[in-house]
Image 1 (cartoon, rainbow, N blue to C red):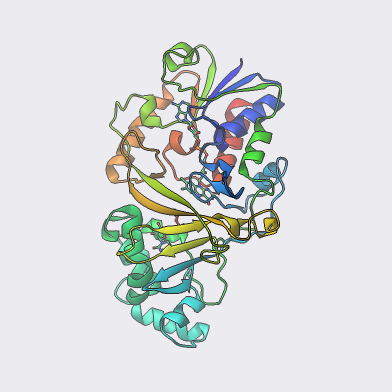
Image 2 (tube, rainbow, N blue to C red; image 1 turned 45 degrees about the vertical axis):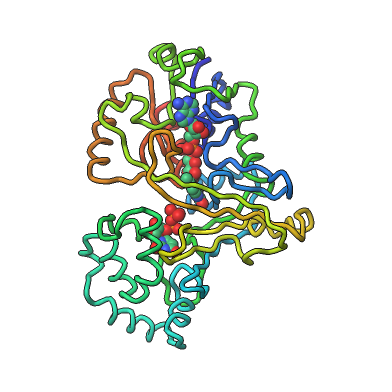
Length: 378
Ligand code: FAD
Ligand code: UDP
């Protein structure tokens, strides 16, 4: 073995694939019973509908190298992601666009009229100087729209008052003064035609790659553990950076999600793949309905059954799956300290979402693994 990779998510598999293609012998270990990290999906046992086990995953990118690379392993459907939100029992389109604004104010504003109205309602804060998410949200869309669609959803999702959250969180969400309700702005978008797991398995399918599942790097009863391997072989580690150093600089904080999956005896539960719930009195943030991700599979999927998943958000304890970095000022200080420790770790490179404590979309995880390969390993 020339290279040990801890974690078989998109970051680890991209490194493994590149290394194997260049003739290196690679072993990938993962503590889960399957490959693919959070992008893993499986067919629901009763309906055959592909379910994204760790929450809905939509592939999108504007990076030509990443797009060329991923197309070596899978084709993509022409799925375009659109999200709707339920506020006080009425459904509105997201991201906030002219359709949302006109429906909310029961009006027929032109783009300029809508802009002028929002400008008037947003006057209390300046977007460039906004000190927190609430100020930024109001500066972008005005107080009435902010209170309807952002305030309570954000408080539910982050379990934190939006006044205590950084303004950048809301920058992910565009505001449009036309009727375009595509969720993403990227050049390329789609879902893997044969599903995520087929794509992930193709990346690992090489005689130079050995995958060992149910294998925890910190379990000293298995041979490829930290104590036995560090300094002996080159390692790419994609698990949580604080865990690697035994929380020496304190635990970094994460949000986790709880998913409630249900098979229903109806052909179509909500008519779309993702419905957000904007109000505080609904405990979940959104409901996913998986059959809508693949309309092209309609003849394969049952016409009288559907699979839905409700998503609940909360702070993670050490035993929970870490999903979203919370990034408080203490976390940022802790991360700097861990980066210093990581620099001193002989022959170990830290990558991916958990290894760098960063919210990375799939295309970003793959792009950053390709850079690590080209710049530090090739
Ligand atoms: P991961 O996929 O987390 O893989 C890390 C792997 O390391 C895991 O398999 C884990 O079991 C393993 N591991 C950890 N510790 C150990 C250990 N001690 N020993 C052995 N193995 C270990 N991205 C998008 O582009 N679009 C989306 O719509 C999207 N939706 C998302 C929704 C949710 C709820 C979440 C959480 C993420 C979403 N993402 C989305 C992001 C996407 O999941 C990540 O970009 C991708 O998973 C990053 O890959 P990774 O390899 O860095 O990490
Ligand atoms: N957001 C919101 N209402 C919505 C959808 C999103 O207030 O209906 C806010 C929320 O603060 C969220 C941010 O916009 O954290 C980014 O949304 P996105 O859907 O990109 O978040 P994801 O679920 O992918 O992390």
